[in-house]
Image (cartoon, rainbow, N blue to C red; front, side, top):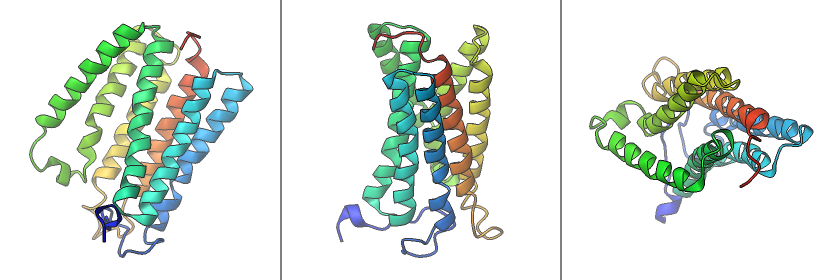
Length: 222
């Protein structure tokens, strides 16, 4: 067996190597697809730009990648799960800086470098074993911080999208809570709580996509 086909068992619901060993975790990923396609429909209805529509499809792709991981459960499908999530975060941040804050590319590049340095420091100083204790949810702390900063800036500037972004941030925190306790409550709830991470995280992605659809055309140049 090669490294890429090695089985990965990370969640409470999975009790064996079968394709449908995590049916609820797998099917709950449909929420991402629904969120992305609904946002895409609204984007096209409002004649939003191509980058807004790409973001909507990217949101839907998160569900596809996660479905592959929760069915195939091996190393390559783990990448199919992780890559769409983190690439969506990166592209959404750049989109926001460019379209909603009208920053020039040199400033965006500098912001990206500083952000990567902050992420590295946060991950470096996390308590040893913290990842295991939270079912690897600590990897999303930088995303929480970025979303919190985004919400704070919009609130301070009284931006009309502020409430939606604050709501997205709160939903994200709740989803991380359910992701973190999945393995810890296996004895009491064999189904686990990871599916709630999917449903709530899809809600968060949907809220952010609505922000892009409604407020992301402030700058037409790419």
